Amino acid sequence: MNSHGAAVTAAVTAAVGAVLDPELHLSLQSLGMVRSVESGRRGRVRIQVALTTPSCPLAGELRAAVVDAALSVSGIAEVEVTFGALSERERMELSGRLRAQRSADPITGSYAPAPRIYAVASGKGGVGKSSVTANVAVALAAGGQRVGVLDADVWGYSIPQLFGVRRTPTALKGLMLPVEAHGVRLMSTGFFVDDEEPVIWRGPMLHKALEQFVADVHWGSLDVLLLDLPPGTGDVTLSLLQFLPSTALIVVTTPQPAAQTVAARVGRMARDMAVPVAGVVENMTALICAGCGDRTPLFGSGGGDRLAAQLGVPLLARIPLDQSLREAGDIGVPVVAYAPGSASALALAQLAVALPKSRRSLAGVPLQLTVV
Image (cartoon, rainbow, N blue to C red; front, side):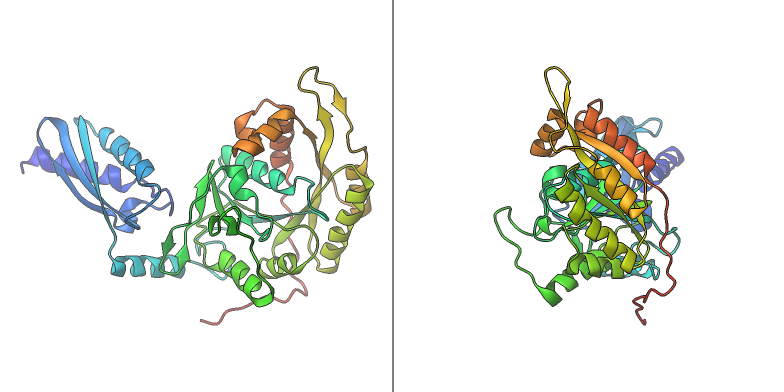
């Protein structure tokens, strides 16, 4: 190979090496996934890349990124990409490196600041808690933040439907990689079971699953982690608040007194556990007519204001119910991406901006420590 060919090969290798793996969000060069780069005549180049698994679900996305990177090098006109896979030994070593980078905080790596963590809670089901979680996550991601969603509603999971994704997460020698959609990293029991299959877990099994979702998922560096809690104040909520002691609660209610009353119990639980409540979200504030735009307070009024006053926290948002919100949920695209100009999407986007940066005081809180 002449000096010009060597220079082209080196430039392509550097460009491709800087491409981020779409699941690990680390460069191909740092992961050792660029196997070979061969430059030929007339601007042709052949690149071999090793995937984390032979059946990597994002191989197409990675191929496109590698091709774009190679074509960015002057003189390259045609790119051929072939895939192999990391060996079992390489997968084991990679898993070990990723685990070694994790600090005492199970969510963040050693060199990253801890993310802001918000647990989206409600006193009862059917108030739109998961829809609020999904749309706030997508709005934050669209604003350039690195966002994860942990679907802790083990029995009534709906995050896979709201994001329109149904695939089993990639496993890397005991480490799970989140499923990504709309720029958000996701983990849910819904990725491991069929739609019609009930999740029948109790006690220790449930606790262990939640612990794995926190400690055995490679979330990478996050700015914000949202927890979609099940309704009420049961084991799941209590366990997660122990696993992640820096969490703040966002309490979702509808305007109805019945919803407000049970949501207040969540607020009292937070107070008893010294968990800060970031604020209240009133969902389904009014039904907006698709034809004339009139607003009808279908579920009454004032529940969000009363709950916020009762808990001594701000009312962060009033989210209307419109046709776009319903359609978006049905087709699996969060409304802030499906119809960003709709009334519901605008209110949810404003909620994402309004989230306070509260931190939980750890005074008197027992922390779970792992001796290594």
